[in-house]
Length: 74
View 1 (tube, rainbow, N blue to C red):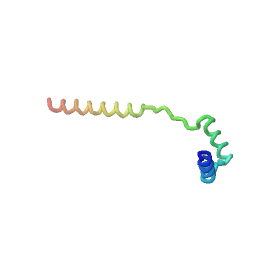
View 2: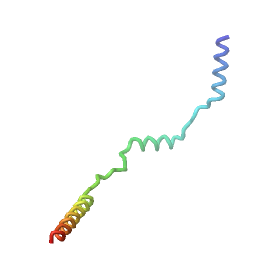
View 3: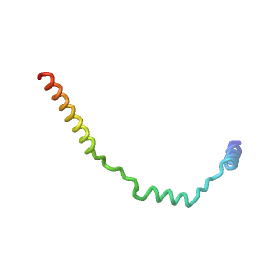
View 4: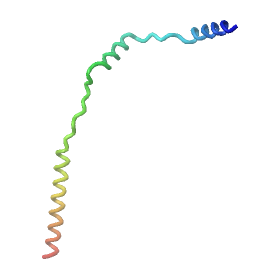
């Protein structure tokens, strides 16, 4: 009785579950993409322009403060 249930279950599984046969070209392409060196590289950011703009802003801010204080005392 138990063996009959197992055989029925196996038959139902073999009817309903069909094996998948992937495309060999897809598998080959996937393997190549996973194993080769990455073509995308992240560049190191340069903060030169940011430092330049901050420096210029601080300079002009200090210059304006100095000019306003100079005009108040005169």
